[in-house]
Length: 371
Image (cartoon, rainbow, N blue to C red; front, side, top):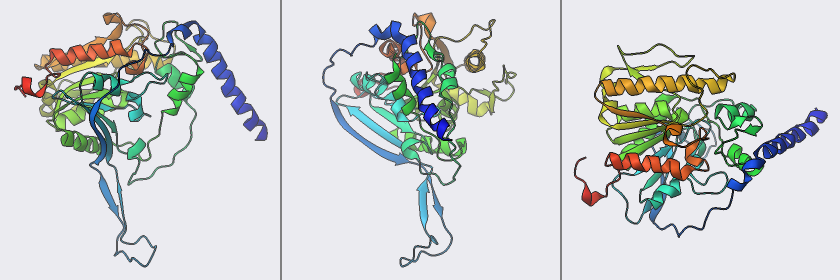
């Protein structure tokens, strides 16, 4: 065992050295950001929303440490927000993906501004979620065993940074071992079982408190994001970054595609998604439909994108307004699963801004009366 404990950090250092070597050609893109004007906000704060209470049977005795009659509050969401001086009408609610928390939308791994600050500068109030049993909303009413499981190398490939330990030649992921170190350290586990019957109500409670707003989802929050939009009338639009789950109405359910199965909802519920504008965005590095990838976790994205196209078509066939945004089609190449935090995230943000403008979701309160 002692021998293993000495070798393990050496292996990590060797991997970082190889990563740094593979990224050396891109170091010129990792320059310090130009100085920006001060970021002025009107207010900021945080709150918990939703949740349940676990109570031990019996009557609490203030003279005893016995847990009889005691309570535990958990399964809520946590929300951090900032409001600009002159906010637009609809706030942006940003929901992290799997293994992530609100940090994913904040400062990028190489120190640039993330979506939180970018869209504050564009006069949107920004609300960052930590979903129930994750991050700052970690109090859970149902426990689980947390087993440390090394998996970074396969995630490096699944999230299409490159083929470990090298970035793709055109990768927009910030190069260098320091950025990769920050990237891995923004990950956080679920503290309890992953359960959409807990997660969705917790997020809905937050959105209902925020009021009419635009929801941004990423990866694993894509599927519960559709469910939240179905169940609350306060979501005015969804911009989904590479969702891993898709929904279809009964009677219009496609077959499984390469291990990616559709999720079924009632036609009545699905019709709620036809009432709001929706974008499903995919980045670069997704294999063409006729050319499978030799890497299984990468190839899943080929099948997810195919399922996403079918969901778009189903929404539009029923009178909705959904579109696919594939970044290479817009001249943006080399983006990863985390396009909103990549080196060109300002250009990625511009696509969101254009969609918000097109759908009149960037109006100011005094200039809009339609919703």
